Length: 151
Image (cartoon, rainbow, N blue to C red; front, side, top):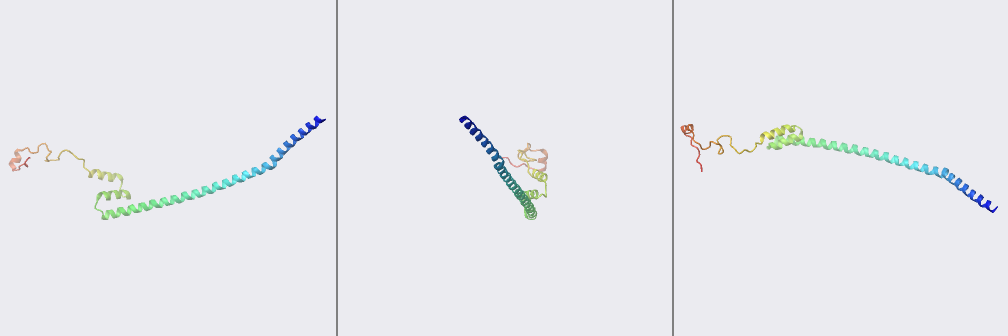
């Protein structure tokens, strides 16, 4: 009989532990599930609020950037107009005309290419580097043209 008491006590202990675990799972587990749902809802609300404030921030930055671009265009246009009236330097006028949008980049490049001459190592006509420089011709002597002296 003594053995039956120990077996009965052990079985009752195991049944009690199982019933306790099931009871904890139903009663206490539901409370932790609700708190997790509540925390999740709070996080979702925070995320929505951050997105709203981020969208407002980007909209404000876009407005500021547009205003800055508009003011820059107005400034360059005003500067180009004043340079057309007052400046003597053609390079300044070309650059400001390009910045203000009155002239295209191709026009400015064509003008600069036309205004710049490539350095040469020869003369166009009767310069000192010409092949026939200093050679007397018969028609020059008849006209009385004398070449400059050579040193």
